[in-house]
Image 1 (tube, rainbow, N blue to C red):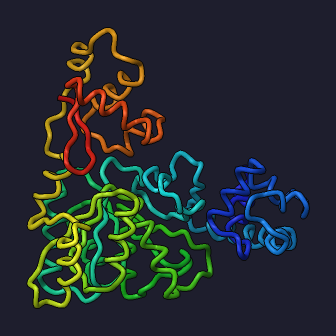
Image 2 (cartoon, rainbow, N blue to C red):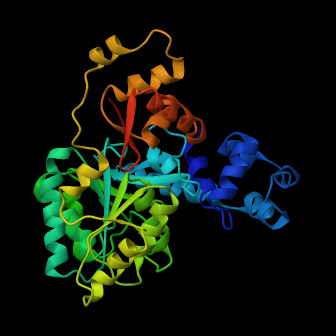
Length: 363
């Protein structure tokens, strides 16, 4: 598929992610969408005469060609949602963007991905927690995601850099600029062992409405979201809510009831929207990351001959170590509704156990 057509599909006014997916499902490719007639376009569910006219009359292809020149010049990759290197965890989210723009070296499908979010007005307590998280998680082979904003976000990135952990910043604007500009040095360091990621095309300004959209990527790209400090309202709580809607794990550090920027974390814990952690060491425990890996050869030797092929596939995947339900679904190529039945069957037969955080491992 033409990269220009892929980009152009996201530049049509009034055509969002859901409509784009409907168009692709109906026509089969971005090229076919732009080749379709006005009448053909209106056959697609949700496409009326106004949207059809916007597609046929758009100059999106010309805009996309201009953007592509800049992307090539600055080594920015375009990740289409059907590409193998598109973040697989995010792909499972119903409102995932069909295109991402990425500059960096980190693997967005890293084996363990942790998002860290919080207030822009971080206290010394919150900054210390960020350093503690990064230092402790160094030995657990994680990728750390945040939003490169002031406060907790940039502290998470700085802590990752200091600890040698790959870290990716998800931006609320195009990659032809950086906001806030004060974090330019941190961003350049991140490009050496991490990267910068956005769904927004070039020339997109860091407008206020872009950041809640950005937050769904922070939540969707990770196995778990950690809220370090947060007021009773704000972006960190939005990210936590989105992560919960994606059925992802959420943890929060508690704080004093009198502290303004602990109220959000305390609320998440009190209302069971987040599990409480008081130290970085709690995270790998709850996520099952401290479990000893069983060798593949030992597993194969212990398998009964009559095990069903799908169950056998699940066991083989788990031979490499504990996996989340999303990772198992991708590896076994099964929707979660069907996968859950096989996992329950294997659990009842005594071959696997479920751990906190929707993680599964072999017994």
